[in-house]
Length: 207
Image (cartoon, rainbow, N blue to C red; front, side, top):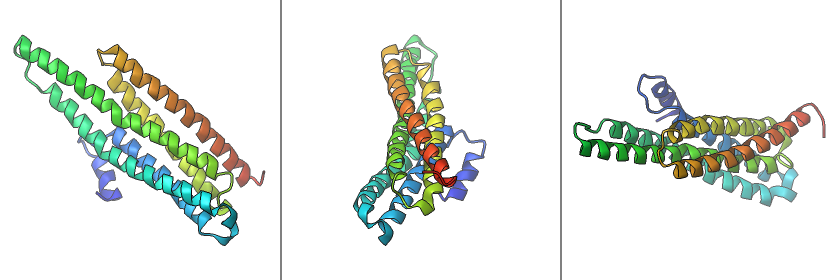
């Protein structure tokens, strides 16, 4: 779908794509902006001394864009599996047991795509945090947008992890997912604020 088609599909009454998928899309925009600023730096003769590093950061950002895009669809597929599981028959004890097991498996699976989005946002923020130190100053606002979008994507995705994890009966699995979530979110929050602090200082003419 085009961006326009996706936005209108998101605005429909269809439950998919939903917030998790949208968070992945926002993350892709964040990583895309990191890639753009890296190229605006590496392609300029003014920054020849950091061109190689900017190229490497840009290549990493391009890979993350692709991973985010994969998560856009993976989140929809995972949600649909949960919906299918809830619609399974439950007339007999055997059917109830099979339905419950299918729901639990689907919920655990549905937590993975948004959790990957949070972890990808962490990687995006890490690239932005390095690039803001030497990237093309003409694009400083774009690197700030990248950090802000990555943080927003992570926060949105985190909500989708939590709504699936809270109904898991396997508390060990739930705790493992929650631990990964909190670790990644902590890094996203710190790194995005560092980037935005530096961007705001540069925009105000500071060092």
